Image 1: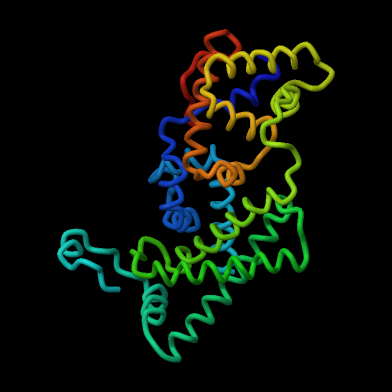
Image 2: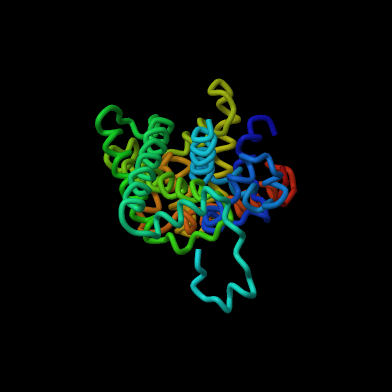
Length: 73
Length: 222
């Protein structure tokens, strides 16, 4: 199995994954919870699963979180 | 904020807005100088976020300087229009500014996706299976293992993916086309391309597990 672990991680899917549309619809809610350290992943496990797997949505999440944290400084 | 349908609002009351969000909604929904000042302030905030986001994503864009600034200005202007168009849809589930910033992040994201096709590094349909091993496989000095990995995945792709799934897999995994850029090229959406890729990943993993290359687990929660 040596050398296969990165491929294995990439191919694994999480049945809780809600997909891009639902994750992006609620992204502002999710980001406010993350910024407030309010158990976002526990409240929205399907969004958390999606953001771990989807590069573009993960980028949007990182950008919005940076915006919210930056504007609070 | 006044709900569109009072009967529905009576059954599903909206969250009460925090004072800052309430101020934004009230002034942007108003008229005169107060609204103009709110618009100018919001545009200033959106531009600041857009500039920060274009800088953060600068590596994906391969542009800098004035062109990057232009992209930020366009994103802020487009986001402001979208926010005003959808102001009535703000439900107070988050702070107003978080909701508003989402629009400008999405605008930057969409513009980055479109920008890819101005200078694509690799044609979308090229199939160089050595790239699979470069991305996921063992070190280059373990040639036999790399060939084994690429061969097994290629066979699984040939035998189990639909034509559409194969096209998406090849573009994203072998050729490194960003998912958003691929959605634009295929006249599709991020959500639809992601779903196609999700199904392809699931099928490929099942096939590789059935052939003994990967552990036989259907999923793993992290």
